[in-house]
Image 1 (cartoon, helix red, strand yellow):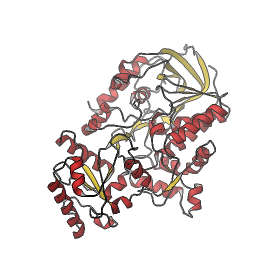
Image 2 (cartoon, helix red, strand yellow):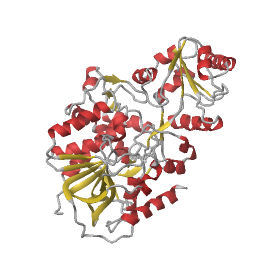
Image 3 (cartoon, rainbow, N blue to C red):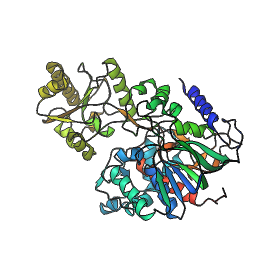
Image 4 (cartoon, rainbow, N blue to C red):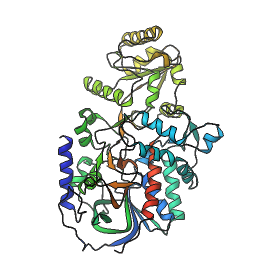
Length: 509
C-alpha cells in the first residue's frame, strides 16, 4: 500500500463520519451541519494527555478557561509517561551554574544540522526560544531536575533530566488536580472521532466515552472498534490536538519503507494514525510522512565506541553513522538471520566514553526497557558463550577490529577512528548487548505555523481555532530529531497553543 493510497483511504474514512467541514477543506464532501446539539460545552478542548497536551491544558486553565482534556487510553500521560524526557534547554539554572555560554540560535543550528534540510527552520528556532520559559514552567509546577548533561550532537551542555517521564507527567497532573480542579477536567477512555466545524472554525468534537482500546487487535482499532457512547462536546474558543505520533502504525510505516514493518516500539499502544487521517480528511496538510526516527536503548551517539557484528562474526556497518542508516542496516541483517539481532561490544574505555552515562547505567541494571539490557564480562570467551557465538569466530572478529583501529583506516565502512578517544576492544572488562532499533518517534504529522495553528492544505492558511502541538505535528525537526529535543518541542507548542487558544474570541454554542 503506497502513501497515496493510504492518504486516500484516510480521507474516505473521515468523509464517512464527517458531520460538518470547512467549505475550504478539499478532501471531504459533506454538508455543514449547524444543527449539532452539544451535550457539553467548554472553552477549550485538548486532545491528548501527554507532555504537549498537559502543558497546553494547564496554560489555558491558568488563564481562566474551562478546559477539557480527553485521552482515548485507560491511563493518562501518553508516550511521555514512559519516555526518558531529557530536556535540551538554553538558560537553565544548571547551565548558568556551570558557566556555559549558549544561545537560542546555537540550539536551533544544532537541530538543523541533522535535519537534512527537511522541516521548517522557523519552527526549530521557535522551539529553542521557548526552552527557558518552559524550564521555569516545569519547575514552577513541581518538576525537579536531577542531572545536567552534555549529550551527543549538541555544541554545549544543555540537557536537564528529571528522572524519566513519570517524574514530569505525574507532578504536572498532580498540580492540575490540586490547583486547577475548578477549570481543568481530564477524562480517560474518551476517543475523538471527528471535529465539528462552522465554516473554517473548529467548534467542537464528536467523541465516544467509555471507549475501550482494542489491545488484542490494535492495528484494527481505528477501523473496527465501535465501543463507547457517542457525545458531542463544544469548544467556545478552540481545540488543541496533542494526540501524539503514529510509530505503532506499522501499516503506514511499512508503506513508506518496507523494512520498518520489522520494528517494534516502546511508545504508547495507541500511537497510531487515526487522528491524523481524520484531520487530513478535513483538509489539514500533512508533512514529512516519509520520514522516521529509529532509536536504541542507548544513545545513538554512543554506539560509535563499540563494534557491531552479525551472527557470523562480521562487521556490516559504520558504527559512527547516523541513527537511521545504522538502524535500517541492522533490520536488514536481522532479516538475513531469522530475526537474530547483531551484537554490540565495548571495552572499558568505550564504556567510559559514553555521553549519557545515566542510560548506560540503566542498561546495566536491566531498567532500559525491552531488549535494552547490557551485560558485563571479563573475557571475550565469556561473551561468546553467553550470546551463543563460536568462540574462535568472535575472538578473530575482535582481533581484526583492533588491528583496524591500530592502522587508523576503516577501508570497508569508513569509520573515523580518529574520534575514538582510546576506545577499542582491548581493555577488560567488556560490555555487550543485542542491539535492535525501535521506532519511537515519527517526525511527520499535521503542518503548523509558529503560532501552533494547523494549516489548511487547500489554502495554505491556518484553520480558525484549531491548533496542534507535540508529535502530532510535522515539520519541526526534519529528517532527524536531535537527542533531547522532543521535550522542548512539546513544551514550546504546548505553551504557544495554550496561549493562543486562550486568546481566541469565544463564540456562543
